[in-house]
Length: 248
Image (cartoon, rainbow, N blue to C red; front, side):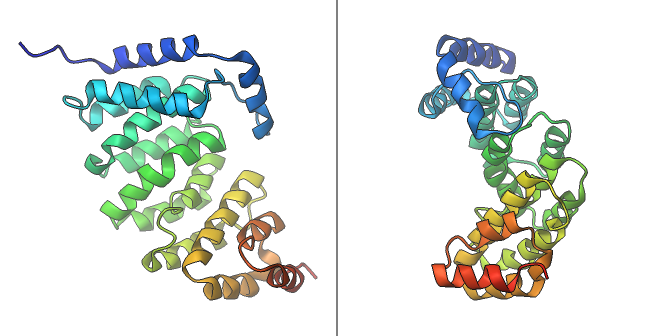
């Protein structure tokens, strides 16, 4: 006789119960120093979160499909704690090879509704999940360009960090630089930092191209973005770029 299927509701309940059992209030209080916005956390160490997510995935891997993992996210993402959102993401991305194209809009909806409401939650999901979708469905590259203009800060940030694992592939550099330039006008520091991070990764593929891009856009580039983007250049090159691109 086959075992009864474990439902997403059961996995969500088990995840929350286990996280509460491992909660560390002192560590949870310390988590806040990494965020400007107010966040909540059970204070569970990352290795323990990863082990729990792996255990939960192993319990369902033989009979769950993508839709079940999505249902788990629909339950856990609205929860306040970062740890809980992380569990949902870590289970979901195990199913990424089977993502349908519709996952793209679903992820955008989670972001736009602030179900992923910190840089940690956005960065935990998008490089793997959205990055996979962009490779599987190349036509989505055109759609993600519009995310840079979305009013929600997390959608904007996702337009950049979704390319972090693709940035070393030359084929993606044109759209990376297009999105990057689109983000320059926005004052949100979490968007500016993500943009600089993306540019730094793109520079690993072609440092000269990054330097030319920075010199071409110069004063239009927020200084936060610029400082992140040039981190891997030699000190003398960094000083020169800061000088040549500063506002007049």
